[in-house]
Length: 375
Image (cartoon, rainbow, N blue to C red; front, side):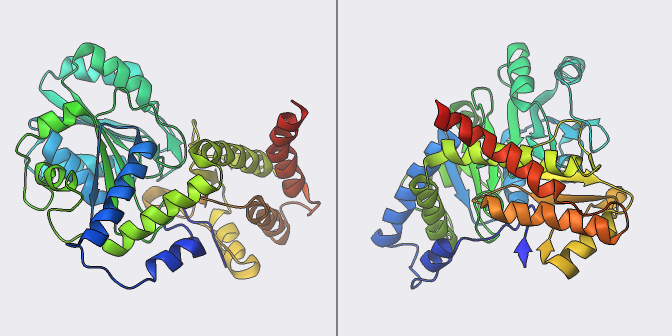
C-alpha cells in the first residue's frame, strides 16, 4: 500500500533503523550530544533565532504558542479545521478571539487582516496557517506578517507550518513563532512538535505561561541540550536521522525544489483528466481535488490500486480527496498515484484510460531537469 495521506507520511527505512537502536536515558551525555546535533540541524531548517522541541503533537505546540505569546486578544484566521482550532485554544484559556472566517478554499488577504488589526487595538498576537491542510490552501502569511509589523511590531505572528516546514522555504523575517510537527514533511511518527521563535517571541515569553507548555522553562533547558521534562528520545534520534538524510540527498534546496516540481506536475496531471483543484491558492504540501465522485475515487484507489489518500472533513467529507506531496517521494511513486486516479475514473465510466496522467506528469516534472542539463 502506498501511503499518500498528508500526515502521517511514510517513514524512510534509514530513519526507522535509527530509531530501532537501544533506548537512551534522556539525562545522559550521550543523548545530550544527539540533542545538540539535532538542534543545530533544526536551526538550518527553521532559520529562526531559537528552536524548541516538545514531546507533543502539533496541537500542543499551537497551544503553547497561543498561551505564551498572546496575553490579551488573538486574531485567528479560520479557513479550515486547523485555523478554527487556534480560536478554540484562545477561548479555552480565557483569551479574547477575533476571527476572520472564510470557506476552506479561500485564503485571507493582507487588507482584511490589516483592517481587523486596526479595528481591534487589543490584538497582541495573530495565528494563521501557512498551509491549511483541511483543504490544501496556502495563505499569504509572509505578506500578512510584514504588513502587520509595519502597524505594530509588538504583535506576535504565530504561523502554523505543520504542513509547510520541510515543504518550502519560508521567509521568517516577520514571523515570531513557526510551528512544525514530526509526522508531516519531517517523515517521522507522530509525537514531536517543534517551534521556531524570534528574539521578540523569546522576550515576550518572559517567565512563560502554564506548566508543561511553559516555553520559558524549555528555552532555558534546551539551550543546555536537555529538556524541562522527559524528552521524546526516540523521535529526536529519528529527527536527527531524517535531517541528515535530507542533507545527504542534496540538502534543503533540492528538497524544496523537488516538492514544488512534484506538486505542480501532479496538479497538472489530474487537471488534464478533467478534475478540478479545490483551493484558490494551492499549497505545495498536498494536491486537493473536489469532485462529485471523490469518495468513490478514494475508495477505488485504496481497494483496487493500493494507494491510500485522505478525504475531507466536516462539510467537505466525501467531497474532496487529498494527495500528499510532503517528504522524500520518488517520482515513480507519484506517477503510480496519478495513474491510479485515471484508472479509477475509467472504472467509474468517466473517461477512457489512455495514460494521460502519467504522460502529463512526466512532461511537467522532468522538463525542468532537462532545462538544467541544457544549461
